Amino acid sequence: MIVDFTIFPTDVGESVSSYVAEVFKIIEASDLPYEHHAMGTNIEGDWDEVMAVIKACRDRMLEQANRISISIRIDERKGVTNGIEKKVASAKAKMKSSNA
Image 1 (tube, one colour):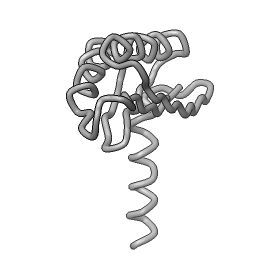
Image 2: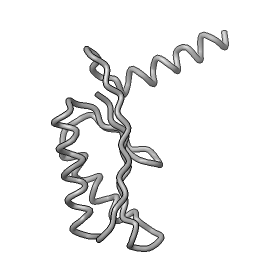
Image 3: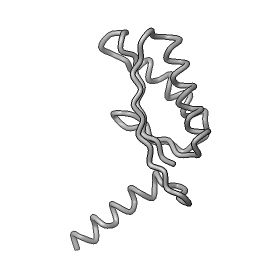
């Protein structure tokens, strides 16, 4: 399962990077495959593992802010592992082959 999620405080002003940095620490400590991007993070693992990481991020954020926003998108496909890398590699390979 690949989960794309964003989490940020809504009541701390314009810059939220220091709060997001705290979330990055939790994600990186989880040992799950992940990929940060400009608008969120992809994490790969089973339901319980990924949701535990998101909950830990939520709990940490609520220690620092009174109001937060969380968005979650899930792509679950049976039997697929290493999906974060495979999905991008597959699309890039098809892009190259269509240019040939």
